[in-house]
Image (cartoon, rainbow, N blue to C red; front, side):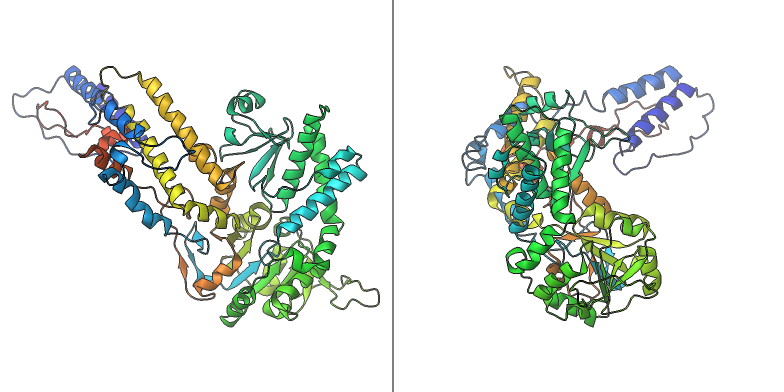
Length: 613
């Protein structure tokens, strides 16, 4: 009896660990008191009960017969067009136009493609706007939206620093910024000189590994990474550097171009040394004010007009919401841009103007605030006043400071504050974790990605990918047909088709690195995981808030989703298979433990009939 109880407990624990009780998904074990033995009855033998339990275990999965044969699944798979240079989608066999399978593959897509818009605000967590009393904004890439000319200027200026001051080969002066090369969310490996995209578990997406400007094939990439797709920065090491800032796109492109030139000219170099020189050159463009002076001299060239920005800020003020600017940029720089975007009276739109904040240290330091003298005086330069700051006043500008003093002097409470920026780590992570602020992210990449994902071609490919992964799972439970190849050969064929699908879909979004939100095997990228973890709401442009009635009692509810909120739901591939085969398909073929688990119930009799499924 003890042996039986131990075996049953082990089986129940194993099933619960997979999210399923032995009685099926969501069903707790049935615990009933066993009645006393009848007079003259004998207890069931322990050995017999153990044999029954083992028999039930053996019938719970591997020995179960499938309702779909290998031949049927391959017929569905091969009915698709896998030459992706031709138009994607069903092409022949049961998927030919007019067939039930073809209709199943296309009808759901019409609803999916019209479900999302780049103007939508997507929620990772539930946010009630009627509880928000204060909304803050970063300046760069949030209030202000830059043209590609800014990246081009940063690139060319840093390139000239490399050549003129760090004495890199003069031939580098001819290289130009390529706006199509990089995306946000990449990682540079300073030890190996590789640029790639990471998943949240620090596994490299082998289809995105670049040495210089040359993409490595997956075998080359694996060899360059030392035979493992997993990389992790050692404690105390800075060998892996993330590229999460919009301004870093120019840096990533310059870094790749310099490495490519040195490889091509067969010049031996240390990737860490090149990275240091490129980073310092980029830093000089920013820290010396060179970029700021350039933008201020020709603001129309470098800033996009934002017709709805002033309307948004006015509506927030009229609704009683306090607004503030919190930026690492100088007041002079912000002043020129905001005058262009909102008019000379732009400071009236904000409760507080906080500049040169040195985020993210602003959130944890105790640096004092300094008031900015708005009159430039005879020198034409603004100075920081020396008197202590004891209050934050409207129509005044402040420099440096810290979040503790800000909250104390304004009377704001953390859960009443929503702060919106573009940089997850500099702007949003710390206030979300340590101060209870709600956070919003501006992700401009959403506009292009959603536009691509809404196309019929992409939706058809996504459906095809979902279907092929369903077939791969079912093949392992299918009844083999005489004369068919081995299961390993069949899976290798289907997996090769899946790789072609993923590569083609990724290239539709970005030719080099694909989506900023996904990594290999359709997992979320490290960038997307950071968005999901530290950001409550996100959208493509700040002005999208206007559509939701700023200051109103709108409540953002997150969608049930596979990854991030803007991704469409998965198409009904089981129904597609049923239509392709023209008969019902048992859903038990989909999974293992959740769908084929045995039912464990207390037996009140000696009946050893087969348990129900």
